[in-house]
Image 1 (tube, helix red, strand yellow):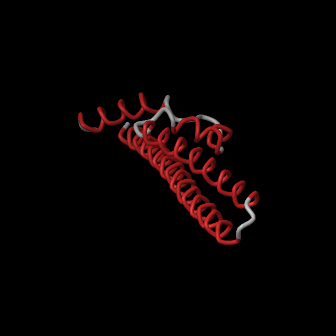
Image 2 (cartoon, one colour; image 1 turned 120 degrees about the vertical axis):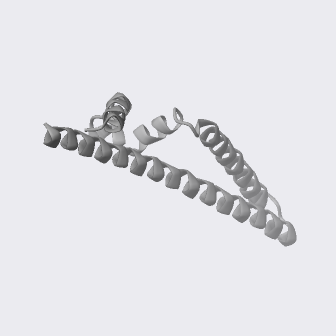
Length: 124
């Protein structure tokens, strides 16, 4: 095995401690918790804050829609409510797509580690 392979194997073993050991840690709450510790944590925090604001705007529009009597105003508030729901859905989809990406990256790192360990065993 070359020096480069040994360095890669050593680095991957050090990073393996960051990977979850049990399947329970790969469920959605665990993935969400880990997403706020990674390199994109500021982006995740921004998206969660954005989702909370949009949910509040949607709830406000819905409340105003039900409390008003004028049909024109109801249509305007309904438009705002629908726009907020669409924006919330897009943000939520992005969030879960990023969780999926992080999960796939984690699995690829595990496979790389297993291949490196297998290659080390075959060389010996």
